[in-house]
Image (cartoon, rainbow over all chains, first blue to last red; front, side, top):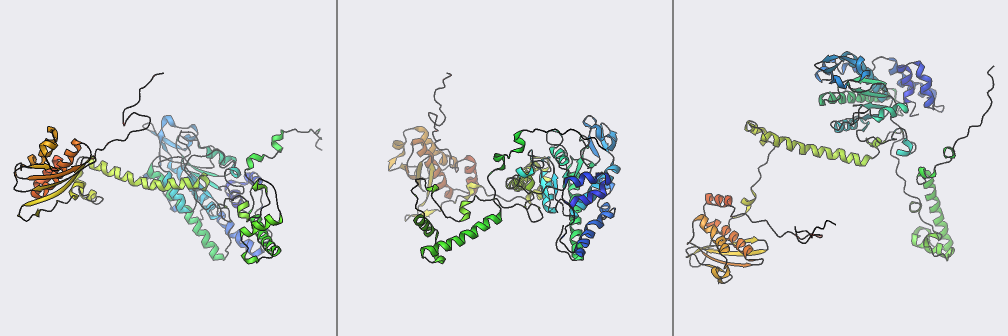
Amino acid sequence: MAAGVLSGVRQVLRGPRLVSAVLSCHGQTFSSAAAPDTGETVRDKILNFPITQPDYFHLSELFTIKDLFEARVHLGHKKGCRHRLMEPYLFGSRLDVDIIDLEQTAEHLQQALNFTAHVAYRGGIILFVSRRRQFGHLIETTARECGEYAHTRYWKGGLLTNAPIQYSPGVRLPDLVIFFSTLNNVFQQHVGIRDAAKMNIPTVGIVDSNCNPSLIPYPVPGNDDTPVAMEMYCRLFKMTINRAKDKRRQMELLRGISASV
Amino acid sequence: MVPQLPLRQIYVASSLWKKNLAAAGPQKFTQEFIDKQVEEFEVGKRHLANMMGEDPETFTQEDIDRSIAYLFPSGLFEKRARPVMKHPEEIFPKQTAIQWDAEGRPFHFLFYTGKQSYYSLLHDVYEKILYMRLIQLMELLLSMPYCSLEEEFILKFRKQLEVQSSKYEIPALQYDPQGVAFSVADGRRKSAKASITLRDSGSGNITINGRNYLHYFPVLQNREQLMFPLLFVGMMGRFDIEGSVEGSGHSAQAGALRLAISRALLSFVSEGEVEKMRQAGLLTADPRIRERKKPGQEGARKKFTWKKR
């Protein structure tokens, strides 16, 4: 039941060829046999209708490229720190400093926010991860205000891959992991990216010019070092999640269903 | 038609198919199981009360223990091996409550870190530390040149602290039957306590514990300590000093007397002079006391002889 949240989302947003891989790891089917037919179709409509629209939550009005520029999102690291796989996302470099292409960033950010909104709409668990001590408190506060979860501390080995032992048997894993910085304190890739990929949990990550975007399904090329930029990202994600949850409550009140999926 | 491949038996290590008993941890019981056990216990308690001919309503745990010892007498020495009938809460180990709601969403926002209570405490402490950072930044602002321009802004966050020594009340000037003004004050130094009566229109006699100060303090340094406050305000021959002192050694007693004299002088002296005395350190009590001896050392600081081997 809980794990079937994402299967519907993924089918539409990721393409049909991934359907079989997705459905095989979540072994539960989507519909239950006992509920009456009218209740089932209404709930299905609530869940499936937003996926058919390109921008159901009107997230494009949350930010403009000018806002990203003023928040210094376009500033990358120096040329020597550049990661090879980030080269497509870079606009160029000026005085040895890499500049990230804000048009691509805007597109990726739009897709990432849209995905987050759909996950939050369907009642998924979202985990904010970052290993930057400078912004840990800010991210934890953002997570608490959204009603979601945060992990800005030392990442223990089997948190996702060995979950029944690390927590209790029957724990529910996050349905989306958002990395505010994909590197850990030793400038290596955060273990959580690899673990989430292993457990088939989709990831949104803010990749700077020294990060590796390969294992992340929804990378957002952008600056992860400036406080202004981080505050902007936190604000955007908080607004998206709150908007999606409010919309869900609104839809349920309209259709008069109390139980959610 | 797919050709049939010959069947081969695949052998795997026994560790793969054996259940790892150690990794599972202590045996976990579901809440329903425990509820059923509690029900059975209550029913059994009533049966036991009926069997013993007692009232089921007022059947306490001691009565249960007594009945079981009567019905199942056991000669075993190990008390824990004897038959026991207790409430399931005491028998089954305490289960940690389920940390998430019906949909599987955990209650605490830091659940996925593993140590939610510890990290939530750190999260709360961080907000306090932000306050200390604010104080640091304000002090940095004050250390800059031209900080007087922002004085108004800074004063909004500052509260006037009273100077500690200004809290000391000046002793009241009293008059004895002859009309002579006198004041009384106390002073302390190390463990010496002194009390001084300063009489006006005297000739500079100093009496301590009933003896002349020349006899009580043969050492010049101590007599100088007594004279210093009067010398500082320039009223050397004006007062008669009568003092009593006890405790500690001669130097400490002299220091205590000096503090007492300075305090008694406050009532005879103007405001400006009081400030000057404060600046001179006459009114500050000396906080130095004997340092304690530490174990593993000869004294407070002296160590035992150091042997290389």
